[in-house]
Image 1: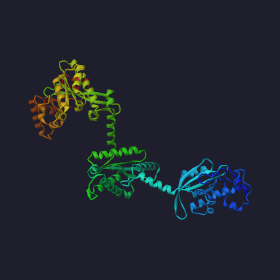
Image 2 (image 1 turned 30 degrees about the vertical axis):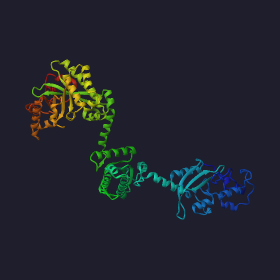
Image 3 (image 1 turned 90 degrees about the vertical axis):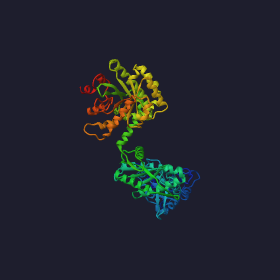
Image 4 (image 1 turned 90 degrees about the horizontal axis):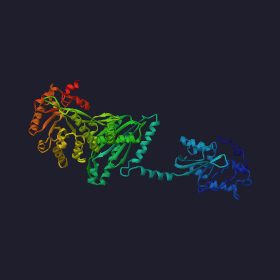
Length: 624
């Protein structure tokens, strides 16, 4: 609390006319002045000698004249916030006689109460707890004219008063406003641009966290135009810009009834921001109206143009939502809309997003996982359909992920093929499978097993597969005839150049080549006559027609029988995949299939379980 200044209340005429120590600043203001009110001046006797604090040769009247003549609007205010004196410039600025400003509350004149923060800082200056306050306020004159004023409040040295000054900055404010509008709006569509959109989005999220009167939710429709690039490329950017302007107009019409913000984020991307959304239904209805509006043809420069849009829709509670997350979710959902066929809207799906995030996490850690040997191999028996004896096994890789647990191949093999990790992973699988097959051969020399390993076509292109196979066979000691490499039908049938040469060299080495999932790809049987293939593995979709209870597609048996006969004429063996019952196994054997693979015999199991099956019947062994 400041101390009472009794000299302000009971001062002599000489002290009332005390001059300010120091010289006026560049704006004509005399810092630190303590000046008498008009009432005090009229009641005071003739001024005595100048105060000892005034500079030599300076008369008090000089400071009074400077205060009154100053262009800067000023007022002297006591510690209670009451105006003690005001100069003519302040009266002119506020549209009132200076005398009428005396005894008024300065906070009311300068609009310092409206903003709680400004009001608090103003009180701190009055009570001596703050050195200075500077702010900009919009003031209303009695004649209705409004202006923007830059207001400064600071203590007067060696006094219990403060000096309040105002400067009219309306022109500067207007110029700043125009510059900000140019900075924050898109020149082509006149919509808010990316900067203003993110400013409004951040403000909406912050306001929703404190505003108890709203819904506390936020929604976003993020869209881009399908086929806009083709219009730009063929008709030119001028037509493209006019089309963007027309699109912006329709988006604005869709958003106008509820006052939603429409912004152009760049290129042909737009966003509609819904503050205090009422739920996903509101956002979906908005997306539907936008799609319908944009599907109507546009007349641009005498040309009739048609475009569509893909829209990602996100709606969620504002609490805990960050702008980065919201935009990532919107961008992901927009990608889904395009992936699902374009010209549609798609609602954000947390489960689908979690799957996408999981794919990204898996993709980024595949190569390190190979180096850390987080993978294991299970083996599924290949069983003779006639005698029921295990002839070989297929090696199937699993990922023992430290976070997601055991993952089957369909969770990561496609990712490995996309990012190239399939090459080191395939090398590890091949070496591990050959080492295990060699161990079985040494343990059961009278019943050697063929180990079948899947190979991706990228392994052929991105590595020297022939050299790797030769090196691994030499390293493990496994005879080449006990190794079978499986490639998908589409990869083998499309083989030419390097892949074909690699297959030929592997076959000459003694390694068997099998076509996996035969019947689902090209099915061009002419290729079989010139490719070094030894086995066809029929896709499980054919075997499904061999159920005992019903025959949904009787043609399957005819097709399989024809394929088996053709394969045998070409010197190939046939393996049926996905055998799940004794009836299926019996009928497949009857039409000539050589081996079967499926859950009827055994699920993929660890190596020690295979050791127990060698020389016996896997079904009986599994039952034990």
